[in-house]
Length: 539
Image (cartoon, rainbow, N blue to C red; front, side, top):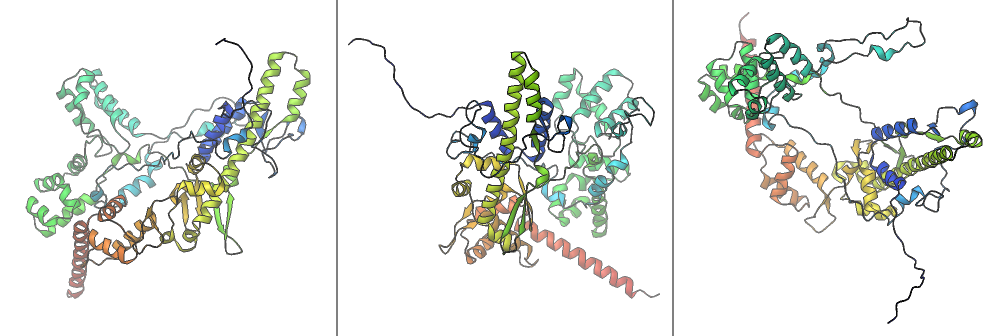
């Protein structure tokens, strides 16, 4: 068989991942804050890109705006390498992407679930309310020039907030004079979290610092006397004990109470009374003192500022009885491509390198404007389909939330599931029933007991919570009883699923709820009897 060379023409399809295509995919899953940051960086980097409210050089309006008509085709051919930017949104081209990114919002739990209900909200509320008042205010020096100077900048007077680490470091410099002790103290301060706690295990601290365990313990004992009281504790019991010593109330009975906080969380007052060796009146006073302590002493220093969540989509009732879906224009960056500036520069530029730079800048600016517009359209399309699928939720509430997955929405709007997943990540919808993340509307399905339409997992959780909230103190519902009532309502669910949903909502077991409600009822009766006795006393 002779070997020969020949030319053949073959036609094939492939997805070319250009930098523009990858950036367009990235833009889909950015939140409005991250998108604003990205656009600001592009505005600084690209001389042909500017904000929509800016004027072009010479007072002329830019030639191209960041808004396009519905007749524009973003999925067809383009002069850009690798195809047009709209290719990232064409159906069937993103099979290689992941289908679900998940949510990033996770709540950190510092205290035990039962103990969260023991303490009143007053210390935490007071700490949040007085965060700025408690922190010493410092100002940066004026950077030159008189008050009438053109360089006058109000940002030079922004107050700097004192963090917990700074507050402890100031006290450290006064408490110790030795370099070794200061080094150990600073190492421990760096380990303190925002609530004021140290890790439970400090066994490696001595080894890393080249010190003895006794040296670390001695420095820790001094740190635990710093302000605020209770700081640098390794657990809740130690934090409360420090505060009680500061108040000179850490007697043997109180020590026994602090060492058995698990019984206090369970409301096992009889066992606590026996361990502390006190009567009912004394144990009530001791529990009242525990409630007045601050379980998170470090929260008033340098706590992270909560940013207001800005919705990306608004849903309002329409005049025809339906729902009107619109984008929040405040979250959409408005950028323009200054074609006039580019035209003027192209006549004056002589070097090939300069021409290539401005050609790339024009191409990138045009891509960004189109990608932002396509991102907005895609978000609106997905949100509209979610509202259509979950019409019962917006009309009647969470009990009518339907099971919904990414595939159902993707098929309805002719997009890939990965695109829908990226659109719903870090996006929020403001509705007549509150503000929800778009992923909230995608829930698993629970089978119907009578063979009818399946139920949403979120609706089932809401039903469980309603049953528990309406239970009587004398008739606490067990998980088995909840299963029976749900099946009577047409919801086929297992007992372990009920327990999982209940624990996810941080609802205690039936035994704990019975104990809590009996304790609450006893407090009400005690207060009523006390008021009655005072009213019957002779004047």
